[in-house]
Each structure stands twice: as structure tokens, then as C-alpha cells.
Length: 270
Image (cartoon, rainbow, N blue to C red; front, side, top):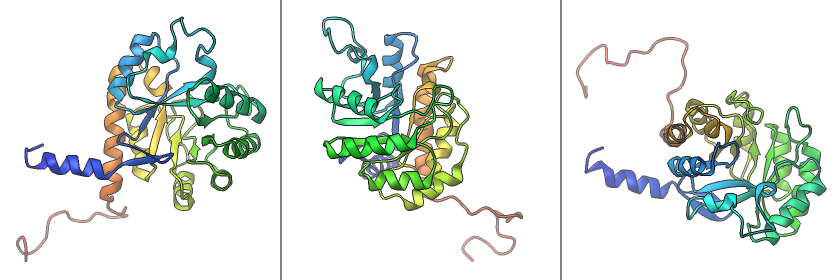
């Protein structure tokens, strides 16, 4: 990047803010805190990701004895904590977990997870919708993890969700975006941010999701489970940025046959 182009790039970055829950962010990569071998490794990877939002399972936080080492002690300074209800299988359990997180001062934001079973970890959308309505009524800012079903996403938005977070693939699978067409339909209809959550395995998966026009990508295992989590965190950071830039630039249309990239006749400008 030349000296002349640097200010223009910085201006573009400032203009392309990511608004979530009425707050502005620069990074469109949201990361998790699970599955790291050590807390120091987790912190280094979080810093390398450039993310400004980190999800934390309320069940993993030591809420009773603050004198003992806590996951929260290892979060990079300034990151916004997004508590999640991981491990909940009913609306009632998820609501109780969200309330607990708020009561101990974590946040009134919640990444709402209500799972259907332990094998697939797919969301139970009936229970999810019920929990969303309850928490929105109690003043929570709710970000529900859901299936890539446009109808369910619409219902969650109507229930007051501040964003919808359809899965790209099963949690921790690393399969990448399995149904981009459904994500595209959700994007066409949604008036809240759409965040792809779960299934990202490598940088190209994140880039593809961003190229569709999603507001952000949320991941955990794709970074924490890599052979080199810190290096993968940097790769994901660049992939999300590149995918966003490609979306904003507007790709060329796909064609069945070749199109010459150089003029066949005449000179430049004629």
C-alpha cells in the first residue's frame, strides 16, 4: 500500500462500521473462548484475530469465587463480552442462564443457544423462539443461534432478535458453508444483521460467507482447533476482511463462455 492510498483505506474502514445492538465495531470477526489448550494461548489467539467481540459460555465462568483464576482474567482488554447459553436444551434453562449472566454483571447481551440434542447440536427452534420472546420482554439484547431456515429467521426477527445467527454447518464440524442459497435468502429478507455462526473450518469458509454479504462471521473451533491457533486467527482476520471488501466491490457475473479481457480491436480509450 502506498502512502497516498493509506489514508483512503483508513477512511473506507471507518465508513464501513459494523453495527450490532446499537454499538459500532470495526472487526466483523466474532470469536469464542472454548477448546484452547491453555488460557495464555487463547489470549494470544484472540489478540491475533483482531476481534472486538468474544463469546463466553456463562456455565464456564466462575461466578461464586472471584478470588480464583477465571476465564475472564485472560480476555484481551477492551473486548466486548457476549455471554452465551451453551449447553442449554430448553427455553427455561436458557432463560435462567441468561438471567444469571446479567445478574453477575457479564452483560444484558446474550448469544442465545437452545440445542435440540447432543449429537447434532442443532438448535431446537421452537424452544429458541420461546426463549427469545421471553428475554426480549425482559430487556435483553438477543442474538439467537438458529438453523439456516429463512422462515425461522423471520420469526426470530419478528420476536425482537437484534440479529439472526444461522449456522453454516454443524457446530465444530469444519464443513464450511453448506447451504449458501439459504443464507442468501435470509439476507434478502432480514432487516437485522445476519451473522454466520458455526461450521467454519478454514479461512476460505469465512471469506465465502462474507462475500455473500453477511454482517459478520462467528467462530471458535476453526481457530482453537487448528494446529497453530494464533496463525489461524490471523488468517481468519484477513479472510473476513477480504470477503467483506469483495462483497462491497461487487463481483463480475458468472457466464457460461469466455469473455476476452483485452479489446480485440482498437487501442485503449477508443
